[in-house]
Image: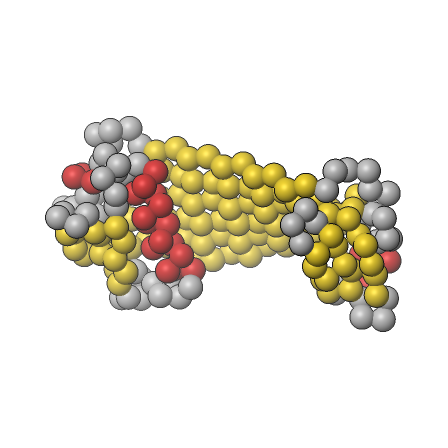
Amino acid sequence: MEKLIAAIAMFALAAVSGVVGAQSSTVVGGAAPGKVGIGKTMDVTATITAIDKANREITLKGPEGNEVTVAASADVKNFDKLKVGDQVMAKYARALVVELKKGGGMTVSRSEQAGTKGARPGEQPAGIVARQVTIVADVVDLDPAKQTVTLRGPQRTVTLDISDPEQFKRIAKGDQVEATYTEAFAVAVEPAKK
């Protein structure tokens, strides 16, 4: 099942990049002193227009008429349940929260958690894949004239623009920033309407 989710995730990425087109999309954001967050969700419904059983490929037609073909590995137990005309509903969500840690003291690090859940054998194909990455970085430099902050993380150093002067005033060399990126992709297949 996880492989079908991964294959249909390719469809979602196509949708995100505009090949298929999202039916609805929502962006939310917010800020508090020393903390900023933004999130986005997208919903896409597509119709299965072709199934190549020999090559285990599914062709999906999006709401704007564009099509994309995705492959399902042999690990997909419910492939035989798919039928032309079935509706594939996909929801993609991602969020980023960045929090200032005054005075530092945390270990500079990167951690990742991931999980999947799929339908049981015999059920309609469905599932969810989620991933969360957390990075702790040191504030190593500030440029007040350019309103930039330089962060050194566990794998690289980056310089970021801080567009909010009130947030910029709160940051000092020696502080740390904790950034958490979360993404989830859920997919469900409904039988064609009779």
